[in-house]
Length: 92
Image (cartoon, rainbow, N blue to C red; front, side, top):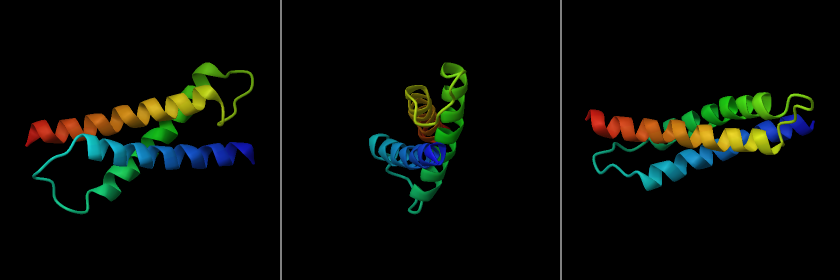
C-alpha cells in the first residue's frame, strides 16, 4: 500500500511542477487550455523519474516514498517540463 501512495504523490508532484514551470516560463502568445498538457507531461515525467530514482539509489529496499524516488521524480519532472516550455518558445 505504501508504494501506491508514493506513486500517487509522484503524480501529484509532477502535475504541480508542471504548473510551476508554466508560471515561471511564461509565453505571451500561448493559447488557452495548455495547462492540462503540461500537467500530464509533468505527471508522466515524475513517474519515469521516480522509477529511475528508486532503481538507481535503492536497490535492496525499493520503496516509492524513499528520498531517491522523490528526488528522481522532482528532478525529471522539472527537467522535462522545462525542456517542453523552453523548446516550444524557441521553435515559434
